[in-house]
Amino acid sequence: MKTQDNFLRPLEEVEREFDLRGISKADWARAHGIRPGVVYEIFSRRSACKRGEAHRAAVLLGLKEGFAERVAV
Image 1 (cartoon, rainbow, N blue to C red):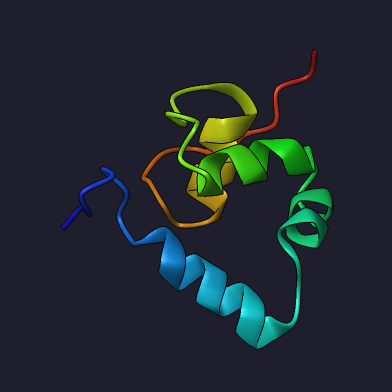
Image 2: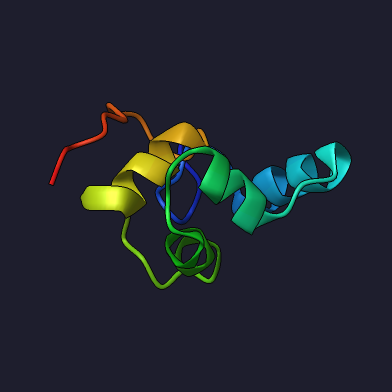
Protein backbone atom coordinates (compact mmCIF):
# COMPACT_ATOMS: atom_id res chain seq x y z
CA MET A 1 0.00 0.00 0.00
CA LYS A 2 1.31 3.42 -0.89
CA THR A 3 1.50 6.35 1.50
CA GLN A 4 -0.11 9.73 0.97
CA ASP A 5 3.03 10.80 -0.93
CA ASN A 6 2.62 7.89 -3.35
CA PHE A 7 5.65 6.21 -1.79
CA LEU A 8 5.66 2.57 -0.74
CA ARG A 9 6.93 3.57 2.71
CA PRO A 10 7.08 6.86 4.60
CA LEU A 11 10.18 9.05 4.40
CA GLU A 12 10.26 9.10 8.20
CA GLU A 13 10.85 5.33 8.20
CA VAL A 14 13.85 5.72 5.90
CA GLU A 15 15.21 8.53 8.09
CA ARG A 16 14.84 6.29 11.14
CA GLU A 17 16.88 3.60 9.38
CA PHE A 18 19.62 6.12 8.61
CA ASP A 19 19.67 7.14 12.28
CA LEU A 20 19.85 3.51 13.43
CA ARG A 21 22.71 2.80 11.03
CA GLY A 22 24.49 6.05 11.92
CA ILE A 23 24.77 7.30 8.35
CA SER A 24 23.83 10.61 6.82
CA LYS A 25 21.74 11.10 3.71
CA ALA A 26 24.81 12.53 1.98
CA ASP A 27 26.91 9.47 2.88
CA TRP A 28 24.20 7.15 1.59
CA ALA A 29 23.89 9.14 -1.63
CA ARG A 30 27.63 9.11 -2.32
CA ALA A 31 27.83 5.38 -1.60
CA HIS A 32 25.17 4.80 -4.26
CA GLY A 33 26.58 7.21 -6.86
CA ILE A 34 23.84 9.79 -6.40
CA ARG A 35 24.36 13.49 -5.82
CA PRO A 36 23.48 14.32 -2.18
CA GLY A 37 21.32 17.25 -3.28
CA VAL A 38 19.00 14.85 -5.09
CA VAL A 39 18.40 12.90 -1.88
CA TYR A 40 17.75 16.08 0.09
CA GLU A 41 15.20 17.17 -2.53
CA ILE A 42 13.38 13.85 -2.07
CA PHE A 43 13.27 14.19 1.72
CA SER A 44 12.08 17.80 1.52
CA ARG A 45 9.34 16.62 -0.86
CA ARG A 46 10.51 18.88 -3.69
CA SER A 47 11.07 16.01 -6.13
CA ALA A 48 8.46 13.89 -7.86
CA CYS A 49 11.05 11.09 -8.34
CA LYS A 50 9.78 10.35 -11.83
CA ARG A 51 13.03 10.11 -13.76
CA GLY A 52 16.78 10.35 -13.61
CA GLU A 53 18.74 10.33 -10.37
CA ALA A 54 15.67 11.06 -8.24
CA HIS A 55 13.85 8.03 -9.63
CA ARG A 56 16.91 5.86 -9.09
CA ALA A 57 17.35 7.11 -5.52
CA ALA A 58 13.69 6.51 -4.69
CA VAL A 59 13.91 2.93 -5.97
CA LEU A 60 17.11 2.25 -4.01
CA LEU A 61 15.56 3.76 -0.87
CA GLY A 62 12.56 1.45 -1.25
CA LEU A 63 10.19 4.36 -1.76
CA LYS A 64 8.90 3.22 -5.12
CA GLU A 65 8.92 0.26 -7.44
CA GLY A 66 11.00 0.31 -10.57
CA PHE A 67 14.46 -0.27 -11.92
CA ALA A 68 17.51 1.54 -10.57
CA GLU A 69 19.88 1.30 -13.48
CA ARG A 70 22.75 3.69 -13.97
CA VAL A 71 22.64 5.42 -17.29
CA ALA A 72 25.90 6.48 -18.89
CA VAL A 73 25.75 10.09 -19.98
